[in-house]
Length: 92
Image (cartoon, rainbow, N blue to C red):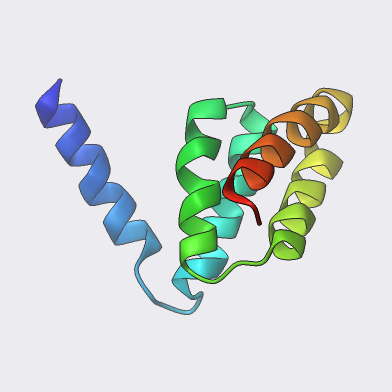
């Protein structure tokens, strides 16, 4: 699987590079999609990356809120538990 992982990393780097949207905004979108898809592993990657890029707790929670709007009740349950746990562990 190393080749698959390498290819995914290249795709990630290409998608998140600066463009019409800045990298922080793209990471916030990835946080929202991870909440909507209920991917905890993705959140453990993208929440810290968004913080590293300067995202505040409030920005991350607003991205989470947008995901909850689209994902409904399951997204609310998932987003409120996992995202808050990560933010608290990061002390953000």
